[in-house]
Image (cartoon, rainbow, N blue to C red; front, side, top):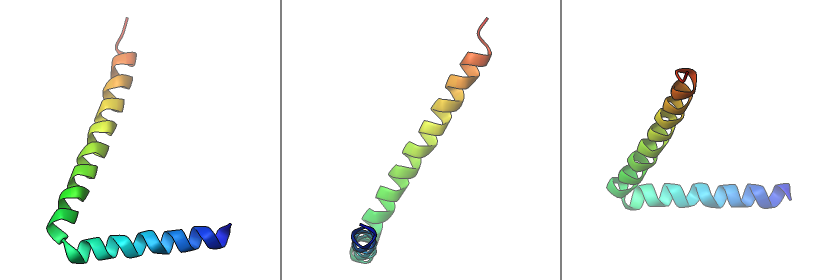
Length: 56
C-alpha cells in the first residue's frame, strides 16, 4: 500500500509541475482562488466562534 501511495503522490506532483509549466497564469488563478476559499473559511469559523462567545 505504501508503494501505491508513493506512486500516486509522484504522479500528482508531476501533474502539478506540468500544469504550472504549461499554463502558469491559469495555475496562479487556481491557486489564488483556493487561497481565497481557505481565507474565507477561516474568517467564517472565526465569526462563528465570536458569535458564540458574545451571545447572552
